[in-house]
Image (cartoon, rainbow, N blue to C red; front, side):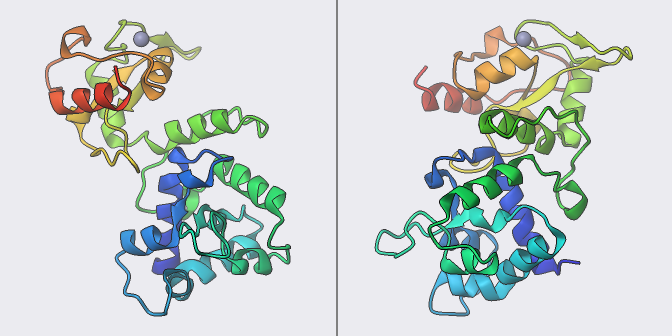
Length: 249
Ligand SMILES: [Zn+2]
């Protein structure tokens, strides 16, 4: 069992999974950012060592003992002067008896972390079971799958219900074999860094999977006029502006 401290760190790491590009550690989280986001007091000379004492070592051992993916490899040094610039500290590799330049192993652990079902070990996030076609060779797909799972919160379910699972852009819905209707909820200003959009209903739209991907990748410009409205769902213009500005649309 993880302590509260270890679990909070795990929740933080799971919450950054949607932003992760496996081959680009710049999309990972730094020791300093993790430390700050958890609101910890600095208890050692570096953020890394302080974090180790406040959940990091515990979480790393927990993943190892349970045979889970080594998700703590998401925390990397982002200070240029560090000997371990853009990679985890030596403790990460040491625990697993890996050489500190065994990047293939590290990358594989991150890919596994993206497709692993962390839901049973979290309390703060509302997760639902979702069909997953995980192909470890295509991290982008894994990432998209994790994204959908993580965001299927109460608010997501609420917005889908308001729109009867019809895409606010094209009106399409998917009828599943059992007769239920399927749609997805999208945060217009995405959650997580670097966007830090709020998890509120006026920052969300109900869309079909195609339009969801187009929004995720900034393929289409948004405007209030193009979105089908519904009673009980007001969309704030500022998030639409954020989407258009961020993607230069
Ligand atoms: Zn659509």
